[in-house]
Length: 87
Image (cartoon, rainbow, N blue to C red; front, side, top):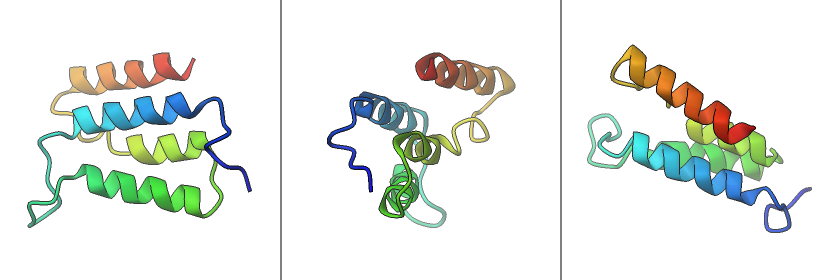
């Protein structure tokens, strides 16, 4: 199983976390005061726990980024930001 500590691309995962945290900063889990980022972190952790690679862990962190945008313009901006960072 691949470990992230030795992966030179770990910066991509950290950047994805930073984006997810920024984009979901004001959201809470349904009917709670728990920050929504906790859901994204949990999904990403499960991906890693079951052998997923960094790209899959990043996808887990960002899986709600576009659909949770407040407008079409914001969704397109988020999509572009994800693509630019992926390159």
